[in-house]
Length: 381
Figure (cartoon, rainbow, N blue to C red):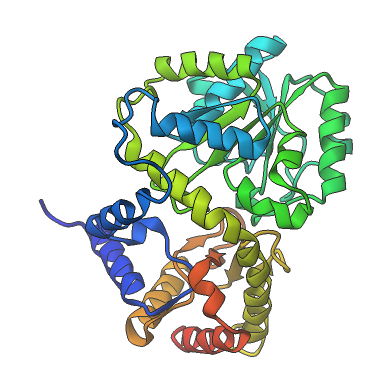
């Protein structure tokens, strides 16, 4: 089979990232199959009894992930799903049946609107409305005064495509109260909820208690292979299990994903507050380095970051920035930035990247970041 130019570029990036001795984070997809399987086999025995029989249609280790997640979130029950797209779609259609309203209020930058090919409308038969189009979370006033009724308010924490932004705790409480005043239920898109505790100054159970249901992911922040959990009242989760089967999500065996989820809960979850704290150091040093560089304009957003992830914006085409990034990795063994993307709107020639600070990034000093910025911008000439 012929290798396309796109595949060649992807292989080049992955090779450069893997060979880099200094990175801010290593994504699970950066590793070879052999590396991932070896790591899973080496660690799985520390979080689960490997002499147990393998899971079949959700028992065994999968059920353990469900119990563990429900306990962490302070919810009555939880169900494991192969994808978050499926979990949320089912949660929202279940709530629509219970509220009698197929209308879901959410942000136009929320994951279902941007990354799921209109699944909520095409598959679940729901309709979406937007209390705000500003690149931030909807305010209580916007929710309260929205001129159209809705049965469910979905809040994405953090709002990834707006820059991983979060409201304050008081703003979140007020937004939830505004939805309750309208007799709407509240669902949290918590794909990255794990790292929100530092910003809110609250534990996971207190955050989750604001909502009627919560979805969390295991591969976005916890380095899992795949998988998600929907948590909420026992009756809702039982109904969700029925819909999971109808959607084709009742997978025969999921032990690799489930074991990697348990490893993430054991190893990565306790470290996320340190990643969030150091992301502020990295973001500040990036701003200082870019301000001292020859680039005509830049934006680090938000500054300081609300989680361990944030955006960097520069006035160059994405392909120019991609080339500079991969060349820096190849030539210096340092990966500062990964993929760049053209701005979704506005004039051409403006691009952004997402920066994640995880365990490898804790080794970076502010000086290291500024030095890497100088190396990167030198390759833009």
